[in-house]
Length: 113
Length: 116
Image (cartoon, one colour):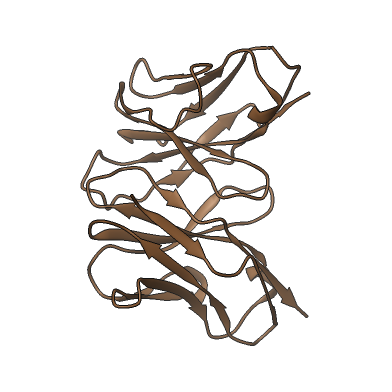
């Protein structure tokens, strides 16, 4: 079985400071990992994905994530937060050979002006 | 190009009514997925199609839920005799091919179902 745990349900940072959203995963086989963002009243948008290539993955809007197999982690980071980053972020896992996505419970990111 | 579209965007149903939710995937996408997102939760997998074949329906919560994709394009999720616990946002996603498991799933805006 596959699962993800998002360690923080809510993160608040000041504009211009770094963002860290934490995610740990569990998967029986070599997983694919994703971060999706959900803005209010908008659809889920893919930020970035890891598919067993480079362990440091760069995504859109300055976000990146590092796959650490020894720690079973896939934390999302951004050097400098922008007001437009305020949204709900989901860490997602997909086991190899399995098409369905398994989502975490989400982290709500608030940006303080 | 056009993304995944869903209709209606909002649906209010009285308990016991049947509802039908429509999904138009990205043109040419082989795979189509349905997810259910309860308030304050992450989306949960319901079912998956590759063309017109329903390959996985393990996430459907009861036999009141039924999905179809008869021509391998548009899909409909039907919920019979709706219950209050069916209230959620229903998300549809599509991806280009049926594997390998690296394809990106593109999501629609969802249908918010409220059962009174």
